[in-house]
Length: 369
Image 1 (cartoon, helix red, strand yellow):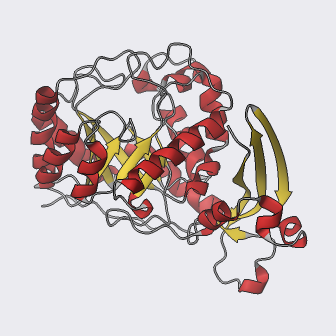
Image 2 (image 1 turned 120 degrees about the horizontal axis):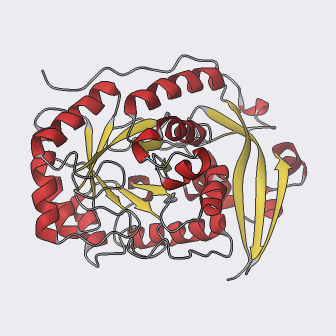
């Protein structure tokens, strides 16, 4: 690996958009129009396996001359401060809540509970009432050790649910799949967002299909296949390794005709990571804003939360999951993927108000009467 410089925004403070350009010598807007500014940068320099980190106040950057001379990463700094466009009609200046609808018999958290079409639709509508602005519908479990689901079975599971929800709500429906055929059929049924845990790498037709559909795509990092991803996962430096992987997948998506403004990145908490890896990614989450896309955090109910809290039952990890979502939002994550929507919405409302000093906007339910 050649020499590379990474920038993690640090020293986040509540944004004050009343400031003029001359007042911004010591801070910069994170993602242009989001709730936070940043006052410092962690400059990460990597040569092969050697990684050096230094925390630098923005004032020191300006005093040193041009940004590019000092940081060697001017394009990344531009991406950190560039406003994020709306995604599938959703405002990316605040954290959106993606509710999980697992239509699988073997999901790690709620496997089998929503395998019935009516139960899955009712669950989705309840999550909307609780505050979800996105519903992520999946018919293939990607928990550690899981086997692949045949195409016909995955379609049988998800299409009736997508169709049923699309008829009753205008909330964004996301299809959680690695398969191009499922993406296409679900889009026809009403899905407006693609969530691919393989970052469009599992199915050779996925990138072209997503480009043809013109839908936004979530690119997630996973180390290997779900069947084997937790078999002794290793990284040279997990934070920059995951960043580089997602950077490469963005390039592949752009080559297929999907613009960066239609992409979201997800570092893949729990997908081929140890507890230590997950904690490093959580602590360094703001680094991924340097990719110039919205950032999604999916930490809800996962095993690492159970390890930290001593809670073996996934459904009982609500407090830990909500805490993780708030930690992500405090680093500017634009989307949190959660099972416990009501608790997460309440926590985000309080945390956002406390961190910014402003009352957050509250959206009403979007279920058809």
